[in-house]
Amino acid sequence: MFFGAILALLLVNASDVIREDGSRVILMKNPSWQSEIWGLYETAKFEPYIIFLFPMFFVSNWFYVYQFNSMNGAYFNTRTRALNNVLYWLSQIIAAGIWGYSLDVESVRRSVRAKVALGVLFVLTMVIWGGGYDFEKGYTRFDANTDFSKSGTALTTNPNWVPKDWSDSGYVGPMFLYMFYGAYDAAWQATVYW
Amino acid sequence: MGALSNSGRRSANFVGFYKGIQSVGAAVVNNLDARHLSYKKEFISNWVLLSAALVVAAPLILTRIKDHVPIEEDLQGTDETIEDVLPSGHPEKHATV
Image (tube, rainbow over all chains, first blue to last red; front, side, top):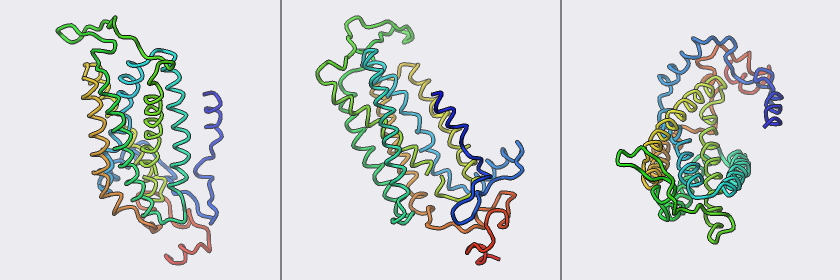
Protein backbone atom coordinates (compact mmCIF):
# COMPACT_ATOMS: atom_id res chain seq x y z
CA MET A 1 0.00 0.00 0.00
CA PHE A 2 2.82 2.33 0.93
CA PHE A 3 4.59 1.56 -2.33
CA GLY A 4 1.39 2.31 -4.24
CA ALA A 5 1.00 5.66 -2.52
CA ILE A 6 4.58 6.59 -3.39
CA LEU A 7 4.04 5.54 -7.01
CA ALA A 8 0.98 7.80 -7.23
CA LEU A 9 3.11 10.76 -6.17
CA LEU A 10 5.33 10.15 -9.20
CA LEU A 11 2.50 10.70 -11.73
CA VAL A 12 3.32 13.55 -14.08
CA ASN A 13 1.01 16.60 -14.15
CA ALA A 14 -1.40 16.46 -17.08
CA SER A 15 -0.32 19.96 -18.10
CA ASP A 16 3.26 18.73 -18.59
CA VAL A 17 2.34 15.86 -20.90
CA ILE A 18 3.39 16.28 -24.55
CA ARG A 19 2.39 13.45 -26.88
CA GLU A 20 4.60 11.99 -29.60
CA ASP A 21 3.01 14.22 -32.26
CA GLY A 22 3.64 17.30 -30.08
CA SER A 23 0.02 17.75 -28.95
CA ARG A 24 -0.88 18.54 -25.36
CA VAL A 25 -3.68 17.41 -23.06
CA ILE A 26 -6.83 19.53 -23.18
CA LEU A 27 -7.52 20.80 -19.68
CA MET A 28 -9.28 23.61 -17.91
CA LYS A 29 -6.41 26.03 -17.40
CA ASN A 30 -8.15 28.17 -14.81
CA PRO A 31 -10.76 26.03 -13.06
CA SER A 32 -12.75 27.24 -10.08
CA TRP A 33 -15.15 25.29 -7.94
CA GLN A 34 -18.02 27.04 -9.72
CA SER A 35 -16.68 26.06 -13.15
CA GLU A 36 -16.41 22.44 -12.00
CA ILE A 37 -20.01 22.26 -10.77
CA TRP A 38 -21.13 24.09 -13.91
CA GLY A 39 -19.13 21.57 -15.96
CA LEU A 40 -21.29 18.70 -14.70
CA TYR A 41 -24.42 20.59 -15.71
CA GLU A 42 -22.95 21.45 -19.11
CA THR A 43 -21.94 17.86 -19.69
CA ALA A 44 -25.43 16.61 -18.95
CA LYS A 45 -27.01 19.32 -21.09
CA PHE A 46 -24.81 19.25 -24.17
CA GLU A 47 -23.87 15.58 -24.11
CA PRO A 48 -27.01 13.86 -22.91
CA TYR A 49 -25.91 10.56 -24.46
CA ILE A 50 -23.75 10.01 -21.35
CA ILE A 51 -27.00 9.05 -19.59
CA PHE A 52 -26.86 5.74 -21.46
CA LEU A 53 -23.80 4.90 -19.37
CA PHE A 54 -25.44 5.74 -16.03
CA PRO A 55 -26.70 2.18 -15.45
CA MET A 56 -23.17 0.88 -15.98
CA PHE A 57 -21.93 3.48 -13.48
CA PHE A 58 -24.63 2.55 -11.00
CA VAL A 59 -23.96 -1.18 -10.99
CA SER A 60 -20.14 -0.95 -11.07
CA ASN A 61 -19.85 -1.47 -7.29
CA TRP A 62 -23.24 -3.09 -6.74
CA PHE A 63 -21.89 -6.63 -6.99
CA TYR A 64 -19.30 -6.08 -4.24
CA VAL A 65 -21.89 -6.60 -1.52
CA TYR A 66 -22.97 -9.96 -2.84
CA GLN A 67 -19.43 -11.10 -3.58
CA PHE A 68 -17.75 -9.88 -0.40
CA ASN A 69 -20.52 -10.29 2.18
CA SER A 70 -22.84 -12.94 0.90
CA MET A 71 -20.36 -15.20 -0.85
CA ASN A 72 -16.91 -14.79 0.69
CA GLY A 73 -18.02 -13.55 4.10
CA ALA A 74 -20.81 -16.04 4.64
CA TYR A 75 -19.59 -19.24 3.03
CA PHE A 76 -15.90 -19.51 3.96
CA ASN A 77 -13.83 -19.51 7.13
CA THR A 78 -11.37 -16.76 7.91
CA ARG A 79 -8.19 -18.12 6.35
CA THR A 80 -10.05 -19.13 3.20
CA ARG A 81 -11.60 -15.66 2.93
CA ALA A 82 -8.12 -14.19 3.05
CA LEU A 83 -6.91 -16.50 0.31
CA ASN A 84 -9.98 -15.73 -1.78
CA ASN A 85 -9.34 -12.03 -1.43
CA VAL A 86 -5.75 -12.33 -2.59
CA LEU A 87 -6.87 -14.33 -5.60
CA TYR A 88 -9.74 -11.90 -6.35
CA TRP A 89 -7.49 -8.84 -6.52
CA LEU A 90 -4.71 -10.74 -8.25
CA SER A 91 -7.23 -11.64 -10.96
CA GLN A 92 -8.11 -7.96 -11.15
CA ILE A 93 -4.51 -7.03 -11.86
CA ILE A 94 -4.08 -9.68 -14.54
CA ALA A 95 -7.46 -9.07 -16.17
CA ALA A 96 -6.99 -5.29 -16.15
CA GLY A 97 -3.66 -5.75 -17.93
CA ILE A 98 -5.03 -8.08 -20.58
CA TRP A 99 -8.26 -6.12 -21.07
CA GLY A 100 -6.54 -2.75 -21.14
CA TYR A 101 -3.99 -3.72 -23.76
CA SER A 102 -6.62 -5.51 -25.85
CA LEU A 103 -8.79 -2.39 -25.92
CA ASP A 104 -5.85 -0.41 -27.28
CA VAL A 105 -4.84 -2.72 -30.11
CA GLU A 106 -4.20 -0.20 -32.87
CA SER A 107 -4.53 -2.58 -35.79
CA VAL A 108 -8.29 -2.71 -35.15
CA ARG A 109 -10.42 0.42 -35.58
CA ARG A 110 -11.62 1.98 -32.33
CA SER A 111 -15.31 1.75 -33.24
CA VAL A 112 -14.87 -1.96 -33.93
CA ARG A 113 -13.01 -2.57 -30.67
CA ALA A 114 -15.89 -0.89 -28.80
CA LYS A 115 -18.42 -3.27 -30.31
CA VAL A 116 -16.26 -6.32 -29.64
CA ALA A 117 -15.74 -5.24 -26.02
CA LEU A 118 -19.50 -4.88 -25.54
CA GLY A 119 -20.11 -8.32 -27.03
CA VAL A 120 -17.41 -10.03 -24.95
CA LEU A 121 -18.63 -8.31 -21.79
CA PHE A 122 -22.15 -9.56 -22.44
CA VAL A 123 -20.94 -13.12 -22.97
CA LEU A 124 -18.86 -12.92 -19.78
CA THR A 125 -21.91 -11.66 -17.89
CA MET A 126 -23.84 -14.73 -18.94
CA VAL A 127 -21.03 -17.25 -18.45
CA ILE A 128 -19.52 -16.07 -15.15
CA TRP A 129 -22.78 -15.13 -13.45
CA GLY A 130 -24.38 -18.26 -14.87
CA GLY A 131 -21.71 -20.23 -13.02
CA GLY A 132 -22.31 -18.00 -10.01
CA TYR A 133 -25.99 -18.91 -10.01
CA ASP A 134 -25.08 -22.56 -9.67
CA PHE A 135 -23.03 -21.70 -6.56
CA GLU A 136 -25.68 -19.37 -5.14
CA LYS A 137 -28.29 -22.16 -5.18
CA GLY A 138 -26.18 -24.14 -2.70
CA TYR A 139 -27.03 -22.15 0.46
CA THR A 140 -29.17 -19.32 1.77
CA ARG A 141 -28.63 -16.45 4.17
CA PHE A 142 -30.53 -18.47 6.76
CA ASP A 143 -28.20 -21.49 6.38
CA ALA A 144 -25.02 -19.56 6.56
CA ASN A 145 -24.58 -17.71 9.78
CA THR A 146 -27.56 -15.59 10.51
CA ASP A 147 -30.80 -16.32 12.20
CA PHE A 148 -33.65 -13.86 12.44
CA SER A 149 -36.14 -12.89 15.02
CA LYS A 150 -39.67 -12.24 13.87
CA SER A 151 -38.89 -8.57 13.43
CA GLY A 152 -36.09 -9.56 11.09
CA THR A 153 -33.41 -7.55 12.83
CA ALA A 154 -31.76 -9.71 15.47
CA LEU A 155 -28.72 -11.68 14.34
CA THR A 156 -27.51 -14.88 15.89
CA THR A 157 -25.03 -17.35 14.53
CA ASN A 158 -26.44 -20.56 13.17
CA PRO A 159 -24.64 -23.19 15.31
CA ASN A 160 -25.04 -25.93 12.70
CA TRP A 161 -23.25 -24.03 9.95
CA VAL A 162 -19.59 -24.87 9.37
CA PRO A 163 -17.82 -22.38 7.08
CA LYS A 164 -15.91 -24.02 4.26
CA ASP A 165 -12.14 -24.31 4.25
CA TRP A 166 -9.80 -24.47 1.29
CA SER A 167 -8.90 -28.05 2.25
CA ASP A 168 -12.54 -29.13 1.90
CA SER A 169 -13.53 -30.98 -1.23
CA GLY A 170 -15.31 -28.86 -3.80
CA TYR A 171 -13.31 -25.72 -3.03
CA VAL A 172 -11.70 -25.40 -6.45
CA GLY A 173 -14.93 -24.51 -8.28
CA PRO A 174 -15.94 -21.59 -6.03
CA MET A 175 -12.32 -20.47 -5.93
CA PHE A 176 -12.24 -20.07 -9.71
CA LEU A 177 -15.67 -18.48 -9.65
CA TYR A 178 -14.39 -15.88 -7.20
CA MET A 179 -11.31 -15.25 -9.35
CA PHE A 180 -13.51 -14.77 -12.41
CA TYR A 181 -15.69 -12.35 -10.44
CA GLY A 182 -12.52 -10.34 -9.78
CA ALA A 183 -11.49 -10.45 -13.43
CA TYR A 184 -15.00 -9.47 -14.47
CA ASP A 185 -14.96 -6.44 -12.18
CA ALA A 186 -11.68 -5.29 -13.73
CA ALA A 187 -13.02 -5.78 -17.26
CA TRP A 188 -16.23 -3.89 -16.44
CA GLN A 189 -14.50 -0.90 -14.93
CA ALA A 190 -11.79 -0.82 -17.61
CA THR A 191 -14.50 -0.77 -20.29
CA VAL A 192 -16.37 2.10 -18.63
CA TYR A 193 -13.20 4.17 -18.24
CA TRP A 194 -12.01 3.37 -21.75
CA MET B 1 -15.62 7.56 -21.35
CA GLY B 2 -12.11 8.18 -22.64
CA ALA B 3 -13.07 7.10 -26.16
CA LEU B 4 -15.95 9.60 -26.28
CA SER B 5 -13.59 12.57 -26.51
CA ASN B 6 -9.95 13.56 -26.31
CA SER B 7 -10.64 16.32 -23.85
CA GLY B 8 -9.29 15.85 -20.35
CA ARG B 9 -11.85 18.40 -19.23
CA ARG B 10 -14.73 16.34 -20.56
CA SER B 11 -13.35 13.07 -19.26
CA ALA B 12 -13.05 14.65 -15.82
CA ASN B 13 -16.73 15.60 -15.93
CA PHE B 14 -17.70 12.11 -17.01
CA VAL B 15 -15.70 10.58 -14.17
CA GLY B 16 -17.43 13.01 -11.80
CA PHE B 17 -20.72 11.41 -12.76
CA TYR B 18 -19.18 7.94 -12.67
CA LYS B 19 -17.89 8.07 -9.12
CA GLY B 20 -21.01 9.80 -7.83
CA ILE B 21 -23.45 7.34 -9.34
CA GLN B 22 -21.25 4.38 -8.42
CA SER B 23 -21.40 5.42 -4.78
CA VAL B 24 -25.17 5.86 -4.92
CA GLY B 25 -25.47 2.28 -6.17
CA ALA B 26 -23.14 0.99 -3.47
CA ALA B 27 -25.09 2.85 -0.77
CA VAL B 28 -28.39 1.39 -1.94
CA VAL B 29 -27.20 -2.21 -2.10
CA ASN B 30 -25.45 -2.03 1.27
CA ASN B 31 -28.70 -0.85 2.78
CA LEU B 32 -30.61 -3.72 1.18
CA ASP B 33 -28.02 -6.16 2.54
CA ALA B 34 -28.40 -4.70 6.02
CA ARG B 35 -32.13 -5.42 5.75
CA HIS B 36 -31.31 -9.09 5.11
CA LEU B 37 -32.36 -9.24 1.51
CA SER B 38 -32.12 -12.94 0.60
CA TYR B 39 -28.94 -14.07 -1.11
CA LYS B 40 -31.00 -15.19 -4.05
CA LYS B 41 -32.56 -11.77 -4.58
CA GLU B 42 -29.21 -10.10 -4.05
CA PHE B 43 -27.62 -12.33 -6.66
CA ILE B 44 -30.43 -11.91 -9.17
CA SER B 45 -30.34 -8.12 -8.73
CA ASN B 46 -26.68 -8.21 -9.76
CA TRP B 47 -27.22 -10.33 -12.80
CA VAL B 48 -30.25 -8.40 -14.02
CA LEU B 49 -28.68 -4.99 -13.45
CA LEU B 50 -25.43 -5.95 -15.17
CA SER B 51 -27.24 -7.32 -18.21
CA ALA B 52 -29.65 -4.40 -18.40
CA ALA B 53 -26.80 -1.89 -18.05
CA LEU B 54 -25.07 -3.40 -21.07
CA VAL B 55 -28.27 -3.29 -23.11
CA VAL B 56 -28.83 0.38 -22.24
CA ALA B 57 -25.20 1.26 -23.00
CA ALA B 58 -25.30 -0.53 -26.36
CA PRO B 59 -26.75 2.34 -28.44
CA LEU B 60 -24.06 4.69 -27.12
CA ILE B 61 -21.25 2.21 -27.70
CA LEU B 62 -22.53 1.34 -31.18
CA THR B 63 -23.12 4.88 -32.41
CA ARG B 64 -21.11 7.42 -30.39
CA ILE B 65 -17.65 5.88 -30.35
CA LYS B 66 -15.97 7.18 -33.49
CA ASP B 67 -12.58 6.50 -34.97
CA HIS B 68 -11.74 10.18 -34.86
CA VAL B 69 -12.94 13.22 -32.89
CA PRO B 70 -12.32 16.67 -34.43
CA ILE B 71 -10.20 19.00 -32.31
CA GLU B 72 -12.88 21.73 -32.22
CA GLU B 73 -15.31 19.35 -30.57
CA ASP B 74 -12.72 18.44 -27.96
CA LEU B 75 -12.09 22.07 -27.08
CA GLN B 76 -15.76 22.91 -26.40
CA GLY B 77 -16.46 23.86 -22.80
CA THR B 78 -12.82 24.56 -21.90
CA ASP B 79 -10.72 27.70 -21.85
CA GLU B 80 -8.08 26.17 -24.15
CA THR B 81 -7.45 27.12 -27.77
CA ILE B 82 -5.96 25.16 -30.66
CA GLU B 83 -2.72 27.12 -30.18
CA ASP B 84 -2.53 25.82 -26.60
CA VAL B 85 -2.72 22.14 -27.41
CA LEU B 86 -1.30 21.55 -30.90
CA PRO B 87 2.28 22.35 -31.97
CA SER B 88 2.87 24.46 -35.06
CA GLY B 89 3.01 22.22 -38.08
CA HIS B 90 0.57 19.64 -36.69
CA PRO B 91 -1.57 18.31 -39.57
CA GLU B 92 -4.84 18.90 -37.80
CA LYS B 93 -3.92 22.50 -37.08
CA HIS B 94 -3.41 23.25 -40.77
CA ALA B 95 -6.71 21.62 -41.62
CA THR B 96 -8.59 23.89 -39.26
CA VAL B 97 -6.89 27.29 -39.51
